Length: 425
Image 1 (tube, rainbow, N blue to C red):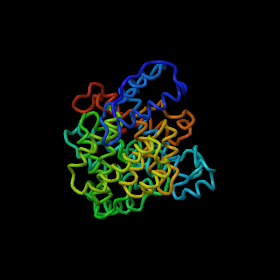
Image 2: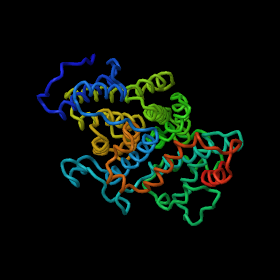
Image 3: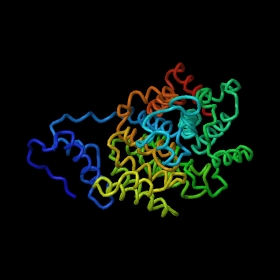
Image 4: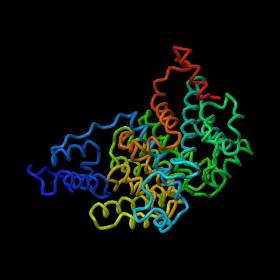
């Protein structure tokens, strides 16, 4: 499909309908696996909309807004799916009506409660930042080893009184809402318990699990690695971190894809381009067939949906239930491709038979990185648990490249608080 300008004139359907049609055509051109990527970036979309409407186009989000959007929208998707994580679609409809769940409702004793998905995402971010601080101060750091330590702190938070936390444990673990068991995955728990007993942090898990617990927590890898401008490095690091708890290759490779996507989206690439680049890396990895097939199906079904040939819920059900990694990623990619806006994408992502909070979280990571914090409905931003903590750690991931710490420290009044917050020990 080649997008070409057409004579300007009044639309038969009105400006909103014309924009919707333009958006659909752009998504097909940018995201369909066999179509030329003539408009696969946000710039391409804005250019095409400018040819078909007279409405001023929004300013693209800044990188900081993309970082915040990625983690906040991920947490909101997690919270949106939390009340229905173990419901069938029929049960969701019975409780919430034919449209399913469309807003944040109480779960775990409050509106906007996050689950283990967001908890572990935050500890992933903390581990990356602590490794960065360690490298700046000591000249050496192993990211998998330091992140493994962060995951063990998360494990402690599941059964330890926050009043017992020592100062050396850093800033994050002191937040009381993290000391709540929110349906943590058995694979993550057992793998980390084995790691703790063996005192061997940083090694791959001794299991054959390909559950979604490895992919749902690695969005911070893509954000952090965007400072390196190397999506393949983001891919590989995310696979290493997923391997800490999930031993099957298909439990790891979707994590690499998600980190690569977030890396590119945070730098301003469109979703179609980001998918092409991630798939190119994936194709070079061993044991990638299941993940390649799942993502190919997601893209094909998205194109059919956009053309009007496949209903969204039907397409989503054909991709699985999201309990295993490649399904959770494929379902989330599908939702991101067909979403009309962030709210629409998250609602679609949690209304299905399966792991609603994980697909909601991953879809939120993608759309938040694509469209930025401003795309999040304000009332959801206000309701989600730990919103300010999430925004702060997103800012730290964004700002860390400019921190003057360790050997380059210029101000001890800045250097010491960073070490106390993210001790590199």
